Amino acid sequence: MAIERTLSIIKPDGLKKHVVGQIISRFEAKGLTPVAIRLQQLSQMEAEGFYAVHSARGFFKDLVAFMISGPVVLMVLEGENAVLANRDLMGATDPKKADKGTIRADFADSIDANTVHGSDSLENAKNEIAYFFRETEIQKY
Ligand code: UDP
Image (cartoon, rainbow, N blue to C red):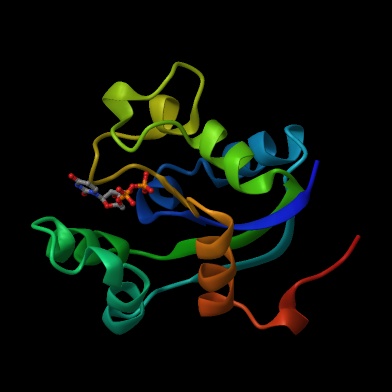
């Protein structure tokens, strides 16, 4: 199996609920190691740029407003099949449809406030990691 890196974001609702530690514990328990981590208040431009692929969608404005409603935790996770493994831990976009025991089923309130972001392909992971992190900020241990 391939060792991959993926971008994870704990969204503002996750910080406001004080479940950052629980979420990171789930990653570590499944072999997803945080190799870069930063708590950051995104600017409107940063959030719009990150979600540019959704800019024509009806939910875009609300999504950006939500993502800048408080700080987020930005992380690079590394591990075997990290992209898919992270998506499995996250659960479906809509927490009502997410499998029991996933992060979104357990912590998220709604499709808008769904607690975590995770890259959905290896190619997107590379671009999303580069959007927030320089290679020198990514550690090995
Ligand atoms: N989103 C939303 N309403 C929708 C669809 C998506 O608010 O009807 C938000 C939601 O926060 C989601 C993000 O837009 O996490 C990006 O959507 P995507 O389809 O890429 O879902 P994800 O990859 O986050 O599961």
